Image (cartoon, rainbow over all chains, first blue to last red; front, side):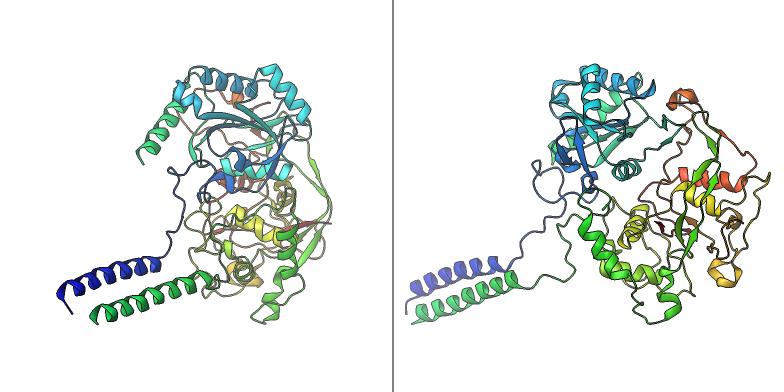
Length: 212
Length: 307
């Protein structure tokens, strides 16, 4: 046997061995790797709000679980259409914030309003509200759930609400920002006169996702 | 000759590797595998059926695994609560009237560690090592030595370090629910009519060390109202989760908050109806500090059920 064919055999053997060993390596565990995932792919982050199983109805009468909001930043608030003052003000402030968003933020951000009052806020009532408030069909989602789902979502957000008299609710004014994976990245009590805190939070999250 | 020998060795190795890989792929999944599964702790929405009913079947009428009758069947001990009324502690929206509370059924005891072991044995997603942070923070069951080991505690020992989500799931698994704020307060909030935090039912000292008054806040943690009937629920030195712990908006604690109080709420400002009911004040303050995934050493729960 010549040294050359021995060498050839060794190289061939090494290649085959390497290929064989590569099959032994376990497949990578797809634990939550938030930023690199394209929207909708892979398991949810263990911190994601979208792990809630509640099902909701839009003002177009489409039913959906919250996970359908995955893929964009979501600015989220809970309200009810019969709210006399605080909620309309909040919605107007969020709309004003939407108008001053830089283009790249705006392209990746959507808005969600969730009713505390599913008894009165039927899909038809929500649709009317959308038209009255001028909420863009593509960018704003209006949701109505059942009492249990609403209570659970509010508890998850840290949003407090309760009956305040026969027809009213008392509640805090909380705006929440979710990243595309449904994790809470920012919250503040209302938007107030300064929309930029929310915008900054989204920009910051976009930058750190781009770095990964 | 060497080449043929080398090729045979490599073929054997490669063949062995692929056999091993095949074996790994076909290995039976671990019995409690929850990877990638989205646990559904809220069967209150549409499609509730499967998980709630499966859990309920596991609990109903079944003796505990440790075969100690007093403890294992404790979760089946319930007491009917007659209809009554309760005056909400906070006046929201200008309403100070008492609210009626419908009759319902309440657990006599808070859920115990033994009860909870059964629950996590059957529902691996709620085990300490597997629960998701959305549903329970890091301290969940922190005083349990293991997933299925609640440690040694003199019975009856209420389970604590559980989150609202966990408590809710446990109750729902039995076809029950958490009591609401007005239900709990109607049963255990003392006597709202009296100027001080009126003591009503007895402290259940005979139930064992964990149910005796050891906390300085024991007086606020639950005392049975006098009109409940011959059998009374027993209260321990723990706060208890309720279904709507987040139903009283707390005032802002930030000194920088410019909003006047009234603009925080849709409706009137918040004023207490019973300013001297210190126990109620403690409970409401405590609840307003909670978040749904919080767990605390002295926070447990019990379940309720509609009649």
